[in-house]
Image 1 (cartoon, rainbow over the protein chains, first blue to last red):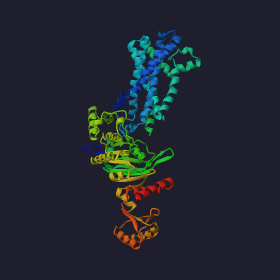
Image 2: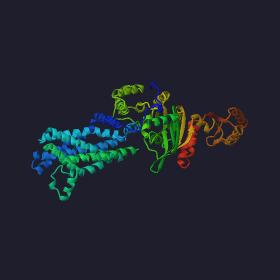
Image 3: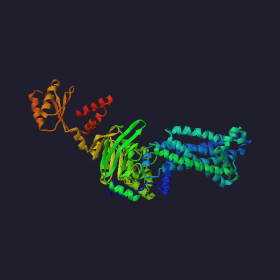
Length: 271
Length: 342
């Protein structure tokens, strides 16, 4: 024990709120914890390593001939589509891991520390953008290997990648919310798959919308995933920015504005 | 704002913890049912109770981890609900299950907690190595926690609670599951903590631990404080020392009892099958008279002993009363009483 005596409570400078600066610093520290955890257990990157490689290969060679006549013509359609689908699916894992993480005793300590309440959640979600980055880079690399020549050039492709990562981060708040309210990690996985599977497949990610029945076209056209896929195609294939990008970014803002407070609230109520 | 808080702090400087009528329900189960606690600054306070008595739930409410359903609690004069962020700046919590990150090393854990508490990168690193040194964990500093023993984990956990040098530390069953040697080390650490000016509130199911460490003890059973005081007060509430006699021939027991009650002028307890009589012994001198009376009565003794009341007896006497509804527990308790008596 240090010989210096402890400062009495009455002589301390105390405040009952956390500043924005402290919130950001706390979140970054928690993100650093997330990165350390990934470094310690690299096997948790398995899914983001293999899923992009396998799915990109599979979907391109299975659907390429049927939809676009050949693989090369299909690549500008499928690569943005599969990029969105893969990276967003990866964000489910964020919710699952958060659920597992929260069951551990260390979250009690986080709760008892005078830190911003949102920091443990925001940090975990922020650290997971490294997962989305890996998935993004691998999917695009697979595309290049198979012969994908994006018309927008490297700069716009990178921009498209960043867009997908930002959107996945926003969507991961939804799964984080499930993660906080669910009782077990496997139920998070279950609920999230049920939500995400229809959303990614009932979109324009894999096939042209005009081949679908009318009622389905209606849904596909309002599906936010479709707008994101279109925005990525515009950026990567043509280097253009359209309304779909605006819609995607508004979607990001709305999701975060709704689910971040909801998640923190639910997190605070958990015992 | 700051002024007001500062004033409240100095007004209530004497009490580190003041809880009034704390209540917590889990569904239909009332885990904590109106707990009152007052812990003086600079003392070690023990909360003693069996498993499921509501000790952990009480601590979690005081440590802002759980919101009370009723009642109020103040830490150094700050309300745990309304001023929770202030309370968190004044406390350190060491949970029943080590609240450290299993997937990281000891150093990484301490650095992250230090950074969260606002230390700079280099301060955090220095603090981490200082604490590891202090708690004898330097050698294991970079090992993953999965390879830590229970005692090492507890020590790291306690080290993590001391980063901000909080004036109040909650220790939830700090020695449960530790071997006797590590347990003694933990007791040492707790004593040293208080010497630096900290207040410690600890829970335990071990009576000797409360006896050894705590200045005052609250006995909790079924979510209520059933007794409160210093270890000595609690012991004397059960009575003075007791005299245990065992007669050689169980036929003599009624007569022996009669003599005991007559000479000592107290009521006694008899366990017929064991041939044992237990009586409170207020005046040791009277025992001589008793032994003479017994010999002249022709009653031969197999064994005689004097026992000071242990906290176990206090505990069983106090908590045993409330448990009469469930038969299995009563028989369990009386069985233990007998063993204690022998």
